[in-house]
Image (cartoon, rainbow, N blue to C red; front, side, top):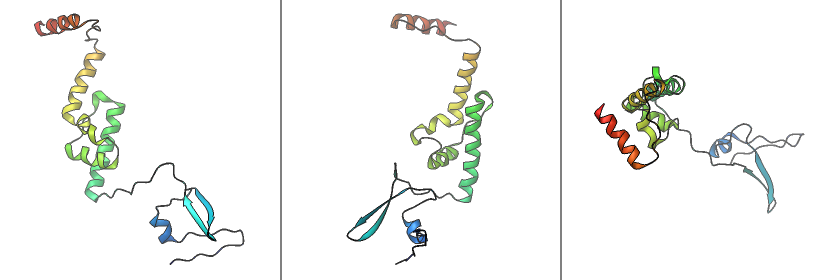
Length: 145
């Protein structure tokens, strides 16, 4: 069992094995209490910490590419490129994108998003339809065009 010593200023150092076992980080807040003559330090977390995800060197390179592509999509949609399937997998593993939204970030999907954005910027939009009949008429007009 690791031990520690109380300093003249009443400070203690939490032994590294204990620190690591409960995934403490510098700056974490601890509640201090006494139970049956023992000092109990309890991490005060607003949310539980998830264990750190480990990435292989290859995954780290893939993650860097995915991160750059996501930033480009968010900042310059028309000149960006979507992610590959492996990039979406690693980005979801890292928490950069939601697992159930991986499809959105693929190149196939982003190609359609870019086309829609070009249509929006060019003013090629139908006005809002007030009724189902109005919508049907707009759709039929598009088919004929």
